[in-house]
Length: 110
Image (cartoon, rainbow, N blue to C red; front, side):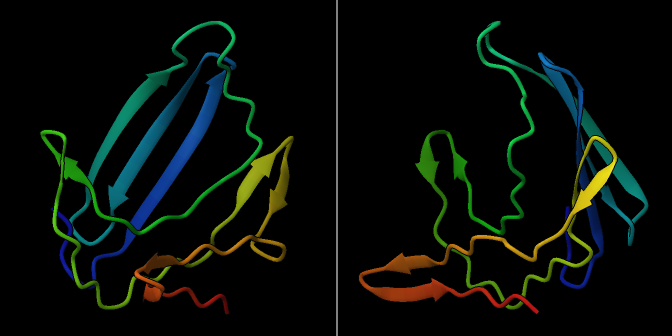
């Protein structure tokens, strides 16, 4: 469970071309969960071409859960690493959630 104000650290590490390890740590509650994920076949490899930081809704039993009126979701110290080089948000592409031509989830990069 994540509560308002909790500090979450998430990482995805490519262990090999066919698998990676996802980890989410709630630093506020000191709880951690991790999962190894595998490529579905030998042609679908984890190339590490991009990284995303997303605040979104989810579905349950195939049905979209009604959109939550998020307050502020803040991502800090976002970085991706490739071959030991850190890549930040300087040239990031920003996508906002729009419904009926109205922005319902805006983004501000500072």
